[in-house]
Image 1 (tube, rainbow, N blue to C red):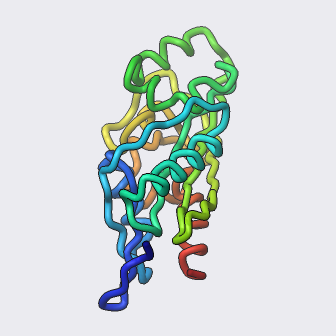
Image 2: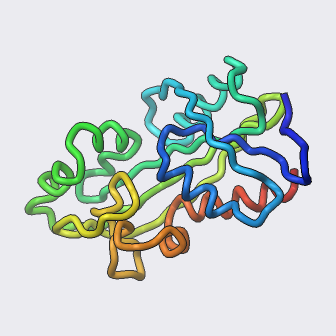
Length: 195
């Protein structure tokens, strides 16, 4: 199946149940000739060591099932904390659901190394089933307490490098300037311009 044509806009399906992520994608891709359409289809994430493996396998699974028309994108992201040997990393969504912000802050008690990075992998599945991975990284630090009420996920416990605010203290545009997802979506914008 291929992307829809109509009124000069083409449709890019974003596979996510996360409304915050959908808002960020829509904002980042505004003003181009692609309309972002959220598809709340679910897929099983494999247990793997890297975001690349998880995003690629998820996109290939969805393509094989034929339930989401191409082109579509999905994103896997993780918070990698140096003082916790990269934890929670690829398990970030599960860790957030089970122990949340406070659990991460408890794990960080007594740890001096507060360096961390958010990483994003966007899997773009093209007509025919080819999958391309687009990456983004944002270095930063973990504060000693939660701050802010915006964003989603671990945003209240991550301060991007070069700023003093957490992601949860920023609006979408400010966050996009720094964020791992913003970097990956900039690469996605460039790639979509060539389709």
